Amino acid sequence: MLAAELLSLREDTLEHVRGFFQDNTRVIVQILRYGRQDGTLSYRGDPTRFAGVILSSLEGALLISRCEGGPERLDSVLRMLLDLARAD
Image (cartoon, rainbow, N blue to C red; front, side, top):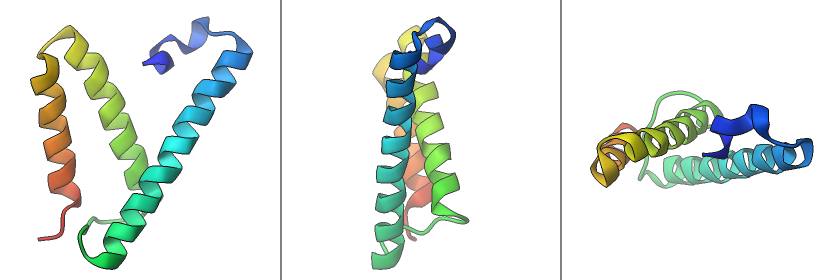
């Protein structure tokens, strides 16, 4: 949510926000790689790029769910992301 306010943040705070996104991307990439290796996840393409899609989707869903739809909107996005990643 802080990313929506990037232009108003101090430089030191901005670095923490960037680190937060980088750390979360790394964790998601690890989850995607492990899931692909053990067969629980089956997604197309590069795990780093897909991690970016996941994180961006979640961040956007958090913003939108605060304005409209509430938790149901966020839940809908989460379910769609799981559907995209799950092995058949």
